[in-house]
Image 1: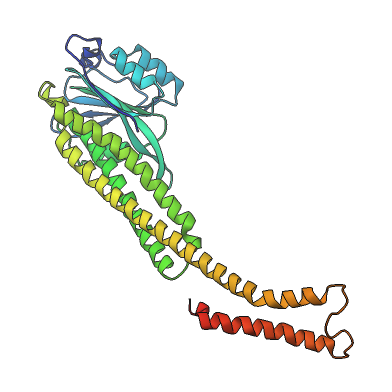
Image 2: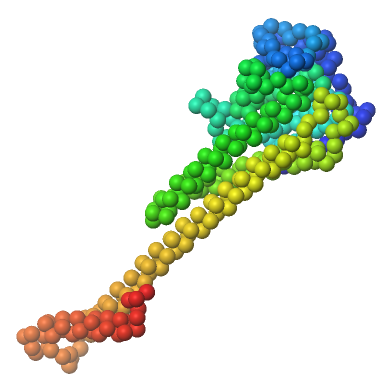
Length: 350
């Protein structure tokens, strides 16, 4: 995946303070999936999505929007968002990115699509803009990690002390989802390896291909995300307000560990693929060896039948009543002679 991180200089258009939007209130937000007011102690208060979002100054807000609703896009265009952040929120970009200014952070993270039966392998994208007192996140499909973060703060399991802590929580749940998927792929590889050891190679090709395809997708996803946090760690967050300072180093280390596990998993899958290829080549060689032996054994009898099938004078056994038996015996004898020669050469020992 293509990655991008931009650090913009003070005075740019992207430096607009979004906290003013909280001061004047948002009104009714169309396409709102959920809204939470996070108090200063980290406790979360769920806000009704049909009611206007107030302008209280205590704590900060998390608004999560469904971009599949056309009204949500129209509302975003009227919101007091920096033009680059607005363009990113409304775009169809699929590459992961993270932009940091002195007043806000915005970007796109990949996440797993959430289905009724649980998380799927399909990848969606979470778009977000956050300031000191506001996090606006959006998506086109229900996402697993952001929903897990919502459940954690709604149940009081996690109490984010500032807005960056909530984004960190989402990334942590993304890592947990990848970790669970890697464990599942590892268990699948264990089963595939056992069946290959039992000699069932050809039937495991589709399963192994699925594991390799999923592993490659996870590696691309993590490579992009790791690059973003490593660059943020290198550039530093000291210029950002304390509520916007992401723990880039901690997140990067977690993602590095996950990517290492995926690389190991892909290496195992590659070795199993080579083992299947070697077993297939060995089976092909055995079949070719048997075919070569049969061809060599039947070649002399074929020559004998060809000779006696010639319409020429002077053929042997033409005046004998037992000519067929003599010809058949000659064919058998030629095949036996070739067999003895091949056995003497040690061909049957291969």
